[in-house]
Image 1 (tube, rainbow, N blue to C red):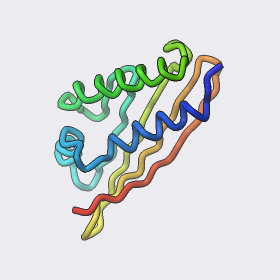
Image 2: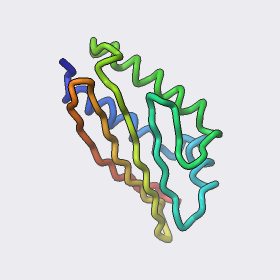
Image 3: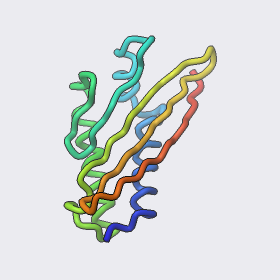
Length: 123
């Protein structure tokens, strides 16, 4: 049985680190997207980014290793979690870059939960 409350915390931390202003790989990718549509999806376990995202493959692979290590620390078998996805939408004001990240996790038991994180970074 997956410890959902602990797992939700791990996924929340993953989303938070993805939006960090110090995460230059992600920021470079975001800046390569058309300004009018800065939205993208990340599948952590499959290591995919849509649209495009070849420049982020190494970063997403690192996040996958980090996530699996945290599963191990929680004593959750890797096969208990079948999907970890981030849906990221970015909007702008004159002073900030506003991130909305919806994290969705699916377990092999068919349970699914989502967490929404909103972050504003001063430009």
